[in-house]
Image 1: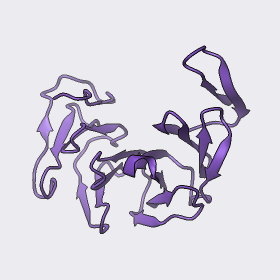
Image 2 (image 1 turned 45 degrees about the vertical axis):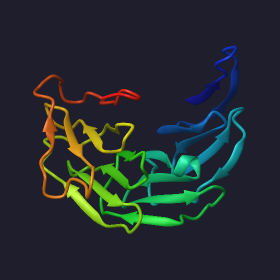
Image 3 (image 1 turned 135 degrees about the vertical axis):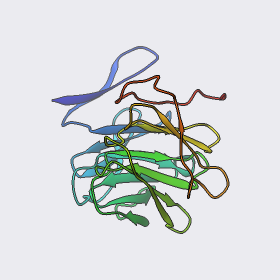
Image 4 (image 1 turned 30 degrees about the vertical axis):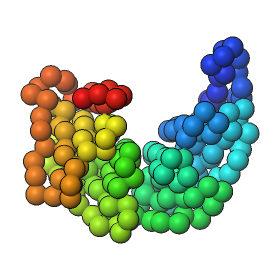
Length: 196
């Protein structure tokens, strides 16, 4: 099994290596983070390694960039860890016992959200690590996305796509909005850029 990066301009392969990726996220046109085994690697556009994280407690399941590409959030069993550029050790750790198969970061940088194996969404305030959990999903939440404002989070894990309000103090004590049964379980929600 292998992975590859292709140049958009000419379609040529920039790099092909052995190994498998479980997730990938572009910071900008010049850097991409990839989850491979228990580490996250940050590669340049040609596939050269810029830096890597120390091994996580288990396989890295998802990753996302924060702070305009200056910080990388890495999800694995038991925690989401954040790394600054070129730091192997995490600069911030957000613990929660269990597996974290999906990760979403609010564009505002205020919220870190993880879909968990226990069929909930676990959320931390990035500035102080304050936590909240949105339980009650019939299946694990494996895909979700914030809109461009960072105020709305759409998630799968139920027969309807649910949308949580993260404006103000966030969704504490609220119920999500529902799509009204327009999608089967397992759909992959995404927000339309620059629009509702």
